[in-house]
Image (cartoon, rainbow, N blue to C red; front, top):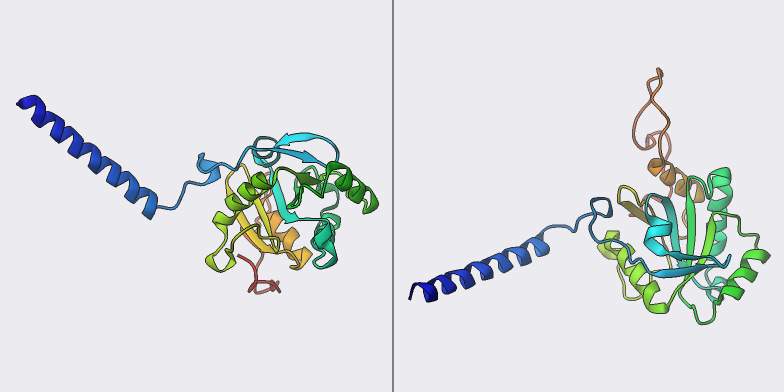
Length: 223
């Protein structure tokens, strides 16, 4: 008799625990990448250079990055790679050392490694900027992970090709702005995420730029 009663109590306790876990998942925000939660898909991707990578382990973890989704055929209507190239030019020597750029094709069937390599050569894509391809499903999984930090009015079905994602994979800090936003603003944002210089005797203002002195022309379009 006592055993049956104990089993009922145990089953009732388990159901409470399960309910608690469901409530926690529903009400609390997910843990950040920096705290070990919701890691990016560590799927296989291939660069236009012919090198193979794991997306999170090799390209995101411990790096400051800028990521966009594109296809070569879509450049005629929406030249997102042209906008990206303006950011790459402004980064200069920092590109590939302090900041990495990734353009992920949404049409891997047409955008083969050879086609991406030809495009990179024709448009002189600099080192530190990778044109990447994966399976279509993996591209959707990567896009879905980035979509978690977008505000509600930027969410839509499928892959968002009109937003650029930027962040620091070491600490799990992420943001986004419109693909055709001011490239100087983009570089400024990346500067907020990069490693700082050692402290010196000179007192400097911490944090983002003083918006009273430098207006962000795209402030109503970013998240």
